[in-house]
Image (cartoon, rainbow, N blue to C red; front, side):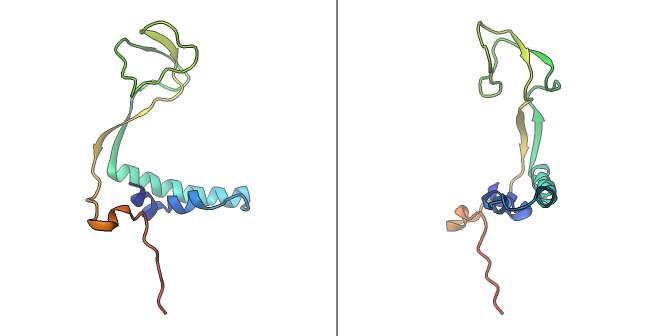
Length: 119
């Protein structure tokens, strides 16, 4: 997945670069392109759905039998479910994955090959 985000969106290059010298306007323009490219990777290879479909910052009730991997309770957590609270993040669940096959051999650990231009 990391290799796909690098190949199509140059995400690793962006995240490993020191962006502090760039003005906000220039950085914002670069981020739009990276965001669009990385989002296309997600859309192409994954189907995602929210774990809780309510709007964020709205009240929700977490039922008994919650999956702690899917719902994290934060704040002043006391008592047993059902628990009422405010939805801070809907969470994401993968419903389908269509990743390409991994290469064989040492290529499995390569996120992006080095590129050498030969004159």
